Amino acid sequence: MRLIPQWRLFWKFWSVRISTFGVLVGGYFLEFPQHAIDIWNALPVDFKAVVPPKFVQWASYAIIAIGILSRGIHQPKLNQPERDDSDKAL
Image 1 (cartoon, helix red, strand yellow):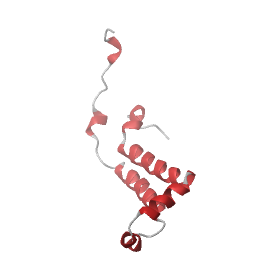
Image 2 (spheres, rainbow, N blue to C red):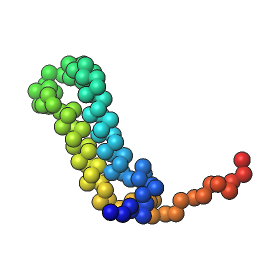
Image 3 (tube, rainbow, N blue to C red):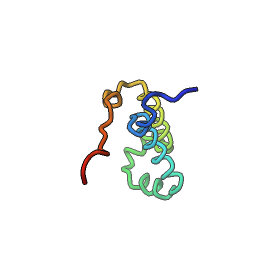
């Protein structure tokens, strides 16, 4: 196993950013389930009839899956050399 050439830029990968967002959404509602219930109760009845009760859970799974799929998207900024700001005068 070897690291990819841009391993120092992992935080710039869309796959990392999207997956992190999915984990945060899912984790937030697991930690604070009352907030999910409050949001659900605030929705109009017509909307609740269409959306399944476990929508947030499945939405966070979908966000993570999109993050995994986004790893295959070309990101031109990752191939540009990073600027070296160390020689700038303060």
